[in-house]
Length: 180
Image (cartoon, rainbow, N blue to C red):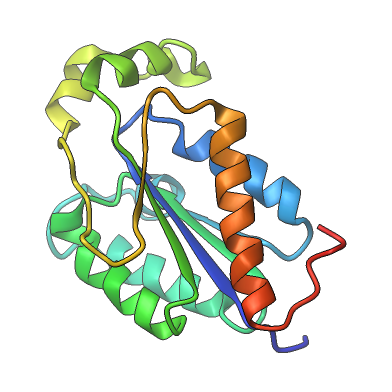
């Protein structure tokens, strides 16, 4: 496979904030060969481990994202990805991708995540009590360029912002983005 200058897109936020929806739409937009790495798939489905310090999902997520570097134009990492457990790993990835990273945090009030959760297919898998137990307010990484996404932003405005940032990264690397 050809070597690419890969752009990393990281979508973080509390459960029910819209990360997975946006990630899937971005993968469809960027097309074939776009790697989507979901924390839930790796941690819950593949490894079936609790989200706690030292869980093996952290390393498998890092390795999976690294796998896409140079093989895919875009790698999307999405999940709650709490700073306390995943912050160091995300910092390492940003450096590994030579800072060709677009980082986003869904900074939504708890009530908004509950409202959005009620619109999801898996709303019956867990409820407001679980959302509250998992809730971490303002869990920003503090990495230069990290952007906050607020409740007043539409899905389309979030998508447009992320697409523009990723394409800007690609243009700065001399990649033709006219076909996107």
